[in-house]
Length: 118
Image 1 (tube, one colour):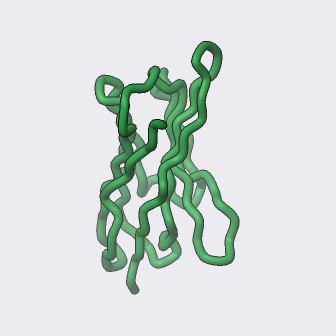
Image 2 (tube, rainbow, N blue to C red; image 1 turned 45 degrees about the horizontal axis):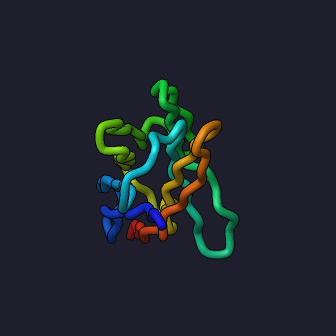
Protein backbone atom coordinates (compact mmCIF):
# COMPACT_ATOMS: atom_id res chain seq x y z
CA UNK A 1 0.00 0.00 0.00
CA UNK A 2 1.53 3.30 -1.11
CA UNK A 3 1.68 6.09 1.41
CA UNK A 4 2.47 9.77 0.99
CA UNK A 5 5.31 10.88 3.23
CA UNK A 6 5.40 14.52 4.29
CA UNK A 7 8.32 16.40 5.79
CA UNK A 8 9.37 19.92 6.64
CA UNK A 9 6.88 20.91 9.32
CA UNK A 10 7.89 22.42 12.61
CA UNK A 11 7.85 25.46 14.86
CA UNK A 12 8.67 28.88 13.45
CA UNK A 13 8.23 32.47 14.54
CA UNK A 14 5.80 34.76 12.79
CA UNK A 15 7.35 36.15 9.62
CA UNK A 16 9.47 33.06 9.13
CA UNK A 17 9.48 30.42 6.41
CA UNK A 18 9.07 26.68 6.06
CA UNK A 19 9.17 24.32 3.09
CA UNK A 20 6.99 21.23 3.09
CA UNK A 21 7.68 18.22 0.88
CA UNK A 22 5.51 15.22 0.02
CA UNK A 23 6.55 12.11 -1.87
CA UNK A 24 5.11 8.60 -2.27
CA UNK A 25 6.66 5.68 -0.41
CA UNK A 26 6.63 3.58 -3.58
CA UNK A 27 6.05 3.74 -7.31
CA UNK A 28 2.84 5.32 -8.52
CA UNK A 29 1.41 6.46 -11.82
CA UNK A 30 1.86 10.19 -12.23
CA UNK A 31 -0.91 12.12 -10.46
CA UNK A 32 -3.06 14.57 -12.39
CA UNK A 33 -3.23 16.90 -9.43
CA UNK A 34 -1.35 17.42 -6.20
CA UNK A 35 -2.43 19.59 -3.34
CA UNK A 36 -1.92 20.75 0.20
CA UNK A 37 -4.74 21.01 2.72
CA UNK A 38 -4.66 22.06 6.35
CA UNK A 39 -6.76 21.60 9.43
CA UNK A 40 -6.58 23.76 12.52
CA UNK A 41 -8.09 22.63 15.84
CA UNK A 42 -11.87 22.93 15.80
CA UNK A 43 -11.97 23.87 12.12
CA UNK A 44 -12.73 21.89 8.96
CA UNK A 45 -9.97 20.83 6.60
CA UNK A 46 -9.41 23.41 3.89
CA UNK A 47 -7.55 23.52 0.60
CA UNK A 48 -4.39 25.62 0.78
CA UNK A 49 -2.92 25.14 -2.69
CA UNK A 50 -3.14 22.78 -5.64
CA UNK A 51 -1.20 22.17 -8.84
CA UNK A 52 -2.17 20.21 -11.93
CA UNK A 53 -0.05 18.19 -14.32
CA UNK A 54 -0.12 21.23 -16.60
CA UNK A 55 1.30 23.38 -13.79
CA UNK A 56 -1.92 25.31 -13.28
CA UNK A 57 -2.05 26.45 -9.67
CA UNK A 58 -4.79 27.45 -7.27
CA UNK A 59 -4.43 29.08 -3.84
CA UNK A 60 -6.64 29.90 -0.93
CA UNK A 61 -7.10 33.66 -0.65
CA UNK A 62 -5.52 33.63 2.80
CA UNK A 63 -2.16 32.40 1.46
CA UNK A 64 -1.92 34.13 -1.93
CA UNK A 65 1.35 35.98 -2.30
CA UNK A 66 2.92 34.12 0.62
CA UNK A 67 2.81 30.42 -0.31
CA UNK A 68 4.06 28.76 -3.49
CA UNK A 69 3.25 25.23 -4.60
CA UNK A 70 5.52 23.39 -7.03
CA UNK A 71 6.06 19.84 -8.25
CA UNK A 72 8.88 17.64 -9.49
CA UNK A 73 7.35 15.24 -11.98
CA UNK A 74 10.46 13.06 -12.14
CA UNK A 75 10.18 12.38 -8.42
CA UNK A 76 6.38 12.60 -8.12
CA UNK A 77 7.03 15.10 -5.34
CA UNK A 78 5.13 18.23 -4.39
CA UNK A 79 6.45 21.14 -2.36
CA UNK A 80 4.87 24.01 -0.47
CA UNK A 81 7.10 27.01 0.18
CA UNK A 82 5.56 29.06 2.97
CA UNK A 83 6.86 32.57 3.57
CA UNK A 84 5.73 35.38 5.87
CA UNK A 85 4.06 32.86 8.11
CA UNK A 86 1.35 34.02 10.49
CA UNK A 87 0.01 32.47 13.72
CA UNK A 88 -3.25 31.73 11.88
CA UNK A 89 -1.31 29.42 9.54
CA UNK A 90 -0.86 27.03 12.48
CA UNK A 91 -2.43 23.71 11.52
CA UNK A 92 -1.74 20.14 10.49
CA UNK A 93 -0.88 20.16 6.80
CA UNK A 94 -1.82 17.21 4.58
CA UNK A 95 -0.72 16.50 1.04
CA UNK A 96 -3.03 14.88 -1.48
CA UNK A 97 -2.44 13.19 -4.85
CA UNK A 98 -5.25 12.47 -7.31
CA UNK A 99 -5.29 10.61 -10.58
CA UNK A 100 -8.31 10.14 -12.83
CA UNK A 101 -8.94 7.75 -15.69
CA UNK A 102 -6.77 4.64 -15.97
CA UNK A 103 -5.27 3.51 -12.65
CA UNK A 104 -7.17 6.20 -10.78
CA UNK A 105 -6.40 6.85 -7.12
CA UNK A 106 -6.59 9.31 -4.26
CA UNK A 107 -3.80 9.30 -1.70
CA UNK A 108 -3.45 11.38 1.47
CA UNK A 109 -0.42 11.99 3.63
CA UNK A 110 -0.42 11.42 7.37
CA UNK A 111 -0.08 15.12 8.14
CA UNK A 112 2.72 17.33 9.39
CA UNK A 113 2.34 19.94 12.13
CA UNK A 114 3.14 23.56 11.39
CA UNK A 115 3.14 25.89 14.38
CA UNK A 116 3.71 29.62 14.03
CA UNK A 117 4.41 31.53 17.23
CA UNK A 118 3.63 35.22 17.63
